[in-house]
Picture 1 (cartoon, rainbow, N blue to C red):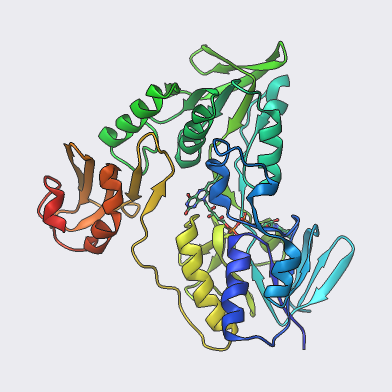
Picture 2: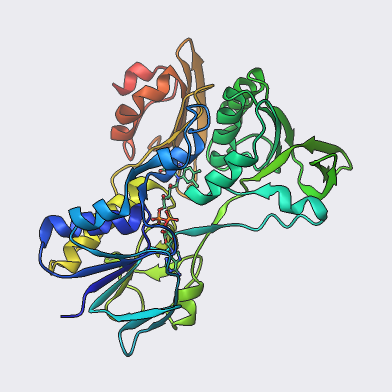
Length: 390
Ligand SMILES: Cc1cc2nc3c(=O)[nH]c(=O)nc-3n(C[C@H](O)[C@H](O)[C@H](O)COP(=O)(O)OP(=O)(O)OC[C@H]3O[C@@H](n4cnc5c(N)ncnc54)[C@H](O)[C@@H]3O)c2cc1C
């Protein structure tokens, strides 16, 4: 029997394999990965510096143990270059295998920073263990880091780097951090909390060029100002890896297009995680991919299932100001109602009928995210007293 083939050893690839093995111990599975195949949790990459963790220490389970525990053949350091959906085969540089069913768990690539100039090679992006190792070894103790982008990952690294004793400047196009997820008052509070730890913000700015200077780099911003640093971390976002699927003739859009059963446009080929656009949405977070993995594992084991998402707040790893966010769906109407009290900030996104569509909880209130999540989709009075939601 040809194996089920999974491409990718990130959280999506390994979670679908683990979920599948809960249902089926016999069907052969081959997992192919362009990285070393060791299992780690990617969210740890943006809060590991302060803990002094090396890339090796971030590995939860070595590949050999994953293979034994999950009864799978793991082909590591092998980049799949072609998928033949008619012949049901995948190929990499020095091998190929047939598949009965194929799962694409290819992840996402950092968006290119687009900086010109000789300092551009001092710009790092941290999207896997290898990137983390390279970035960490380029860091000087107490050195200066410029971060491009003040979204989730940029803000988390700003917190982690300052907590590790580095000097940090963030260049961010938006008017406050995470402006697409949280209202101004919460964003300003996050910016202030990080500024208190030593972060310097450049809002409404982009970096254009990177020159080298004295072993470091000098960024020129679009208003002509300069930011000097030892190294630069680009955290301007990620883009689903769709190229392999597109060249195999699969339908792609912002991600590899799949329906709620995670089925692509080709028979017996599925996709999940950061590479997948599920029913029109790319949700590049851990909780959605866990739900996708459970549904897909059931389908692979013969019980066709659709993914259903519970309410999934995102916890932002910024201890300077703990934050939990349930972003309102793109294009949803309504507005934020913001209330501050001694426990933090409670921002509720309510539609015209006062139905809770999203929230941002900062400070101690972030710990109440489950209570607020339970009220999502329900009518609430206002943000004024969190107790009303209990
Ligand atoms: C720094 C950072 C912090 C984050 N923090 C959080 C957080 O706090 N909470 C949260 O919910 N989410 C967080 N995220 C997002 C979350 O980590 C991702 O959504 C998730 O890890 C994606 O998993 P994945 O398996 O889809 O992709 P990846 O982990 O990127 O795995 C992709 C795999 O595919 C392999 N691959 C790709 N192309 C090929 C090919 N052609 N041939 C063979 N193998 C291939 C790669 O080698 C890799 O093994 C964070 C992301 C980053 C970068």
